[in-house]
Image (cartoon, rainbow, N blue to C red; front, side, top):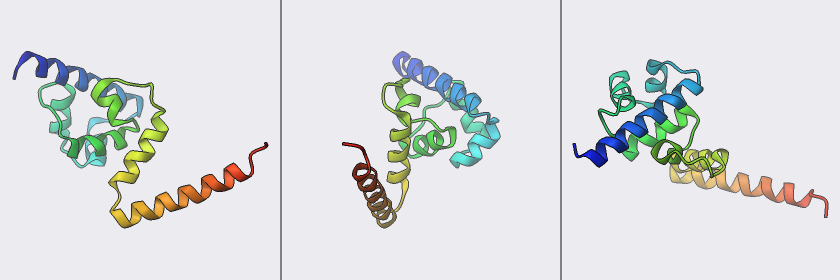
Length: 116
């Protein structure tokens, strides 16, 4: 593993561990929620292994943080909005469309009831 990749994986692993602890989860719990093995999660947290986007999104959801935070440590994006977006994109297309329609309807109601 080249030095740049090693540094990236180490930083990512620290953020994963930080988020897991902040969520009050044990490694086994977080791994199960993310659909990965506890061994793999441990290796990611120690910076020994990288993680694919296929596994990153479910791990971020399990830890209740954004993928952006895990990858880069960014907190400047409203994490709630990012997390909702990640949940939506994880849905099958028909369910995603339905959820977006419900959200748009809810936002229209909220806007209509805002004071001028």
